[in-house]
Length: 232
Ligand SMILES: [Zn+2]
Image 1 (cartoon, rainbow, N blue to C red):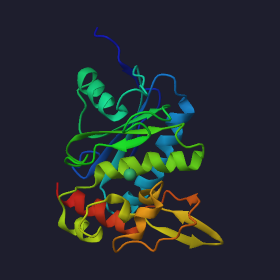
Image 2 (image 1 turned 120 degrees about the vertical axis):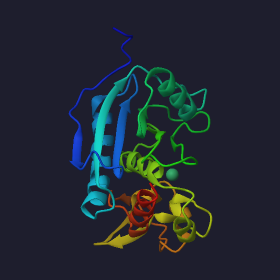
Image 3 (image 1 turned 180 degrees about the horizontal axis):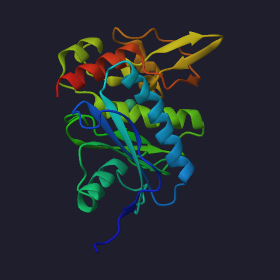
């Protein structure tokens, strides 16, 4: 028996064809000290977003796994970098997104929410990401940020169509949208926490009032994930 580094406390959430290379594998990992509710809230928000991508045939399916990991985030260092190192040293991660749900509010770069977005997408690589339960006090925003980081990991930065949608800058936040419906302003997942960024690119009408959050990806986000999946 090897050293136990993690456990799986919940059933996998599965839809579609898990053998396809256009199936997304998302691992939601609860850091030591976080609650099961934190992990469940992140997983359910991710399911909300990915189920819409699946229904629209953007991806062939998804598998969301939940883990409790024996790893604590440290506010004095880069949370994302430490998490990536921990994963490689302890778990030999398989393809997909590896999202750490942690409780660090401040500290160094990558401490709040972050994803390793500069490399290949999570369709064919293990890509670490992080989200903090305490950086924001709004629970709905936390849930949308969990989905936001997962979506970052699915987008292929080298894709020409995505660069065009984002004014050549490849900034995924320009794929988000702020919009007004039934008396409320909403932000879609890619513009959560980055409302001012969404005024650029061809995807969004920017509204400064966005205070509510939807887990429904914008059409540009869907197009970008679709283009990335087709590059696999
Ligand atoms: Zn972001």
